[in-house]
Amino acid sequence: MVQQPQLRVENLTRGQTLVWAGRVADTFWASLRGLIGHKPLVAGEGLILVPSNSIHTHFMGFPIDVLYVDKAQQVVAVDHDMAPWRFGRIHRRAHFVLELPAGAIAASGTQVGDQLEVQGYRF
Image: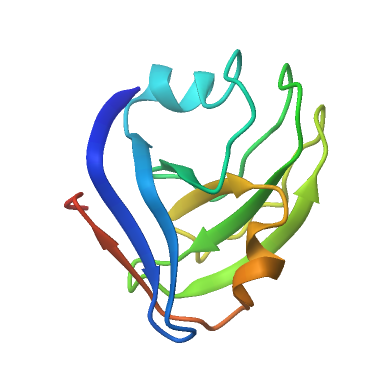
């Protein structure tokens, strides 16, 4: 995983900051590893997997929330509280996936169609 200390993700539609201490996995190996072996995410943390239109939570010890986001940084699908040992659905329109702490989607009110802005990473 590549460390991105200034990575932020804002939900412009809701006026909410989703991530202020995020990271990016933009290589095959970093994406494959994802959050495997990682401690549970806390508020403000997140991982962007790019390019990606689906995920798995195999070998993870905690649930996560998942946003599937297109090239225009618009949310195209969500998975709430995805348990370990699951496969996410494939979303053909998604360009990247944002993994968040479980409960973050509900807490921020994020919904399909919301406009995000990723700061600190160039796609």
